Length: 298
Image (cartoon, rainbow, N blue to C red; front, side):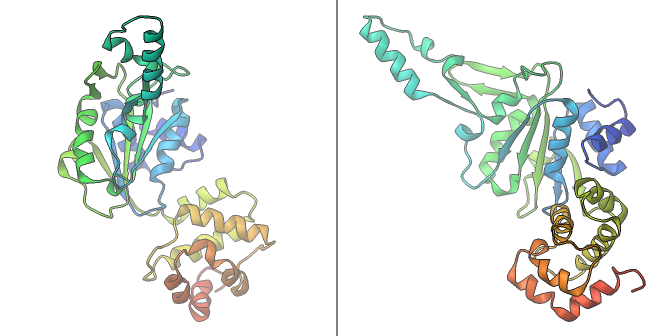
């Protein structure tokens, strides 16, 4: 069901265990109402991808995900023809003494739909709601791929030479994410609504962890979030994101911890930090200093 207001957007996202602030919920609601793509930029692990997943749950449709990478091309993103089946059909026709026309080999039966094309077509399971297309980490793709996307983002249509133009009857919700490893061209951003996503404030992140890692004691969750927020203030190569916060609480709970202590922190730092330089930076004295601010009475 489409959200009817900003408050309804927040409420429906919360039912999917996604806790958005009002600013983020507003731009998402506007993207739906204005039928505009949504460009989310921010550090890894702040919930950009999870938003698209939550919206697919809200709308009751399957999430279509296009994971970007260097060298991504139209065939991988849009469509390609099933050449082995086409050749087989041609040979069978020749065996029967027939001469199939070229257009008979270029129709839907032989079309392999990739996420971009599929997003323009109705979802058979939920034809009355827009599809949700996640174009994840656009900054990993090459710049020519951005130019290829412009027709889809502005017109919600694609051109297939053998068939013609395919236009969406109901424009999809397109969510584009970027970790800002490079600047994305202005032509793409102009076609989207924009939202910068930072790490959530303490209470909101605690709410997320409580929903996603309920097995951890409430006191442990609070201490863990306080520790992580202080940890993010250190000059790290990669600060822990929300996913790491959830995993850390689950790991601590699995080890039987009910509150933080220096030993449990040191034993599980590899859940939070993924680079050797960061692990070396957070040494014993640093852990003790961070822990003092995350422990009741510290």
